[in-house]
Image 1 (cartoon, rainbow, N blue to C red):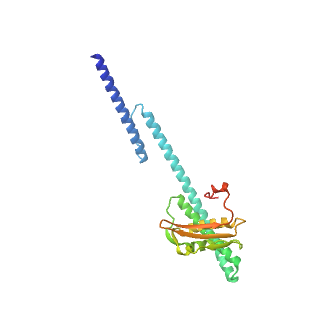
Image 2: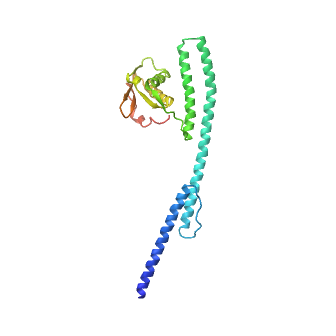
Length: 240
């Protein structure tokens, strides 16, 4: 009889301890969820789980402090970028005024036309620098508009001073198709791609074409410059 009593007692004790452990684990899970919701109240209990609760609390505080420091540094960087972009705009505006005067004195001068195009592009790049700072600040600054592909390609080509030996062919489908996006961001991407083709010593032909199906519209740029070296393919999405 005594033997049975001890077995029942041990069984009840084990059940009680396991239930308490499970409850404390659930409390720890709730504690983590509350901290994620910025509720940092920690229960004042003294048991084997108290040390773990304290460690979790300290870890969350360290993570929050690190995040706040990172946010402050990011905000400073964005301010610096915006300051630089605004400072660049002032001399660019002066340059454009000077170029307009030169155009009046020397009409139909090709070098002045090239200088003007590149200065306008430099002005666009300063705008992009401002947009980049806004992107880093998680601001939604990308425009979403209907873009005629022919106008987009024409703008990109007009911004470039390609080698005279290069023949650029534009497919007829370009005039018919359009896409939805940000005109100037897409134009900058096109300029970079065509410029890379122009920089290839063996390139003398660039073909720009478009294809449309029920799912998407594609814009394809092909050249006969030999392609990108294998070791550089993995670097194509790097900024520099």
